[in-house]
Amino acid sequence: MSFPISTNRVNYSLNITELNKQFDVFQISTSENYIRSGAFILDAPSLGNSVYSLYFEKGKSLYVLMKHNEENRHSLLLILNSCEGSENLSIQQLNFSQLPHYISLQLLLNGMGNFESTNLKFNNLTGHLYCFHPQWLKKSKEKTNEIIWQIPCLDIRITKDFHLLFNVHTFTSIKLRNHIVFEKRKFDEYPQYVISAHYTLKRKLKDDKGGAFILRQIEGKKIEIPFLNLEDIDKFNCCKLGVLYSVLNEFNGKHAKYAQIKLEKIEEYSSLDYSHVEKRENKKRIETILTSKSINIVDKISDEYSKRFCSEIQQLLYDTYSINANLSKKINKQSLNICVIHNAEYYGGNEDAYEEYNDAVIQHITLEDFVDCAEFAIKTVVNELLIKDDIKTKRISLFEWDKLGYNENISFGVTHEDRSFFMNIHPDGTFEFRETKLDLFNLTEYSECVEIFEDAKLRSEKINGIIKNSKNEINIIKDTDWFTIPMIDSIKAELESGNTKLRGKAMREKLLSACLDIKMFKIDGIQYYFVGEIGEGMKRKINRAANIRLIEAHKNATVMFDDLLPLMSVTFVRNGQLTVVPFPFKYLREYIKITIADIL
Image (tube, rainbow, N blue to C red; front, side):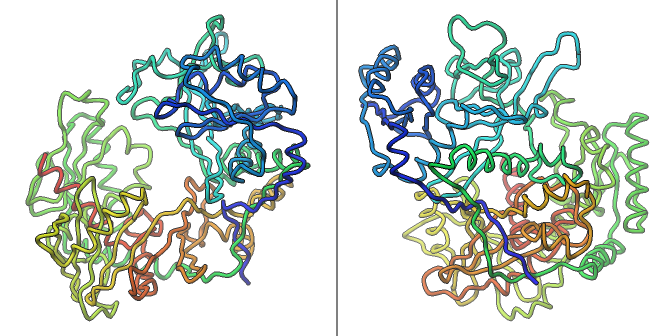
């Protein structure tokens, strides 16, 4: 039995008549090229008591939603006249029937900044809705003088295609400005915010005292919020999907007269499960390869702690793969080398500890970052080494390519910056790489592929990769803003009742089908798929959503999706997780890293 799969695409209803009775909408436009994303105008209208919300993404227009009042236009003009550049602004009152529906929904969503919530804090700043849970706050440890250093938030928005997105952004105390890298904009160009009496954020004015925050992250310290946490109800309430559940409930309750939002479901799909048998076969294949290779652990730190750490890595390799690794202080060109160094923070940019040899296979691991998760990460290290070794020998060893039944060559292509790279794989698993640029006067077998990449760049489309067969048929794997969402209402109910186990295949399929294995479906003749966690042995925490990707047949090409499935039902490139695109793309990206390092 298959269960419907929810997604972040929303079904909605809008009561236009009731909205026009209760609210006034104004479009504020500038005669300049655009409104700066940090301009005071984006927060100034919120100073008016009758302002319900503001919406701005980018461009020349800002939308203001106000509770219906004949004096609204006049009040808004008074506020705007105090803004810098007010002489370039114009105001137009609109009817809700004139607004795109996604803007109407976003204005109502942003209006949640006016509501009190038990666990969540809503902030309508610079025309966006930023929501945070108090437990996300990064504070000092001193209880007597507690200082808030960072406020991680979810930027919650609805796209033109009605996808509900919630991306992590962080407000950081200006006291940490020396830890922030400013490139495109200077520090003074960022709007500053203070924590209000209601424990939410508001634009800092001249009279406001206390610590201020800007919307910037500390360099190298990206904050992540788990997509889903099943450990208990408190952890669930603090994860992205727990917050989404609360936001949808709050929205539908507060705006019952005007609008409703529900998550769209995929009813029909097929599934490709990954079994314990395949997992054992993957592990056995790696063990077989390693019996003919030697692993050399190189200690580039050479202190007592690093010596002990290297010995632990040696033991882990034996426990995991039954191999005896060598301990050394030098790179061995005939071995697979695990090179132990400090992280970049230790060296402070004064020393490049990474050694690269054209004829040696090396995987660097950093002592500080690796030590707490060595047992989990050792498989990834081995996978990376074997992929680098395959690139060196120009033959796929991690996968029995000849068993796929390909009788002809097949190519995989990606772009990096302004360069296009291709991997051409032969039926016996041997391959070669090639870099190609768009050249109308010198056409190659990959010219059409490069042209596809260039066209996508002009349309701001994200292409994951291109596959081309020997018949010159081309398939394009594209990203979307679409991702799957498990049954969050049922999950919350189970956790609230005290059931924190959520075990058994039937329970997993019912509640978590949207996060498991590989699922495929078609809509209007277009093939879509997503890759989740391996269904057996489901983890308690999922850090990222399962993004839905589409496979587009270029011109009149055949869709090769069925042939590609075995290339994703592998775990050797993602540390026990299924690959989200065919694994040859991993080889390509690794080759690109090596190539760029050689150039630099």
